[in-house]
Length: 279
Image (tube, rainbow, N blue to C red; front, side):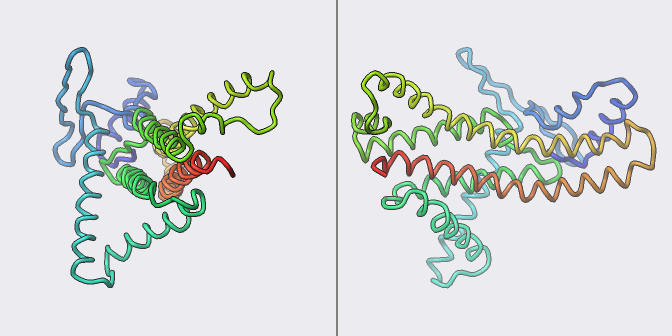
């Protein structure tokens, strides 16, 4: 998260003065029970504990709700626009371009025949991740996809879709039988079966870690570059720090797009591999 509020400056000055360690960077990147608002400051969020479970509303939860609200509002507007006219314009045209891109450049080439069954899920994943990524680039914003719990949940859902898709097409027994390459020696089958089962779980793990790490790293670098101004206590470093921070920020816009693309593409690829095992 890259914020421009006075809290960042205050924490940075405290860190430079030796009153606080580099934990101030993580404070502005990790999830929290407080929400920072312009002209208001920090607002405490409700903490809910039920049957030993922590169901508290956190900063990342709020921004996931915002992302969901933006998408619901946008697609309702797009749907109404199509009812009025078959010729897309404005935001409708932009959304259609993205939908066609996901369908024609990601889902159809990686899944092939039967891709229509998985298109709604993959479109939802793409737009949700993209919206969450961009929300973290605005002042006072927070990147929900920079939370390992969020990315792990998305990866777990993709894992379930991959397994269900493979079993729907090949049957439960046929799906697990298809994990093994043909022509294996009998004694090697148990070993390879364990390896293939482990491979099923490494795929969602890689999806979760890749998205989490990429969306977190850029924000940490930006804050660290800005912190150099106060840590080194010299005006000479200001132009360099701001220039590099601006460059990383612009790069983060590209990363936000790429990570939504990569997560969707890999999920679609894994679904295609499970759905069409015969290939």
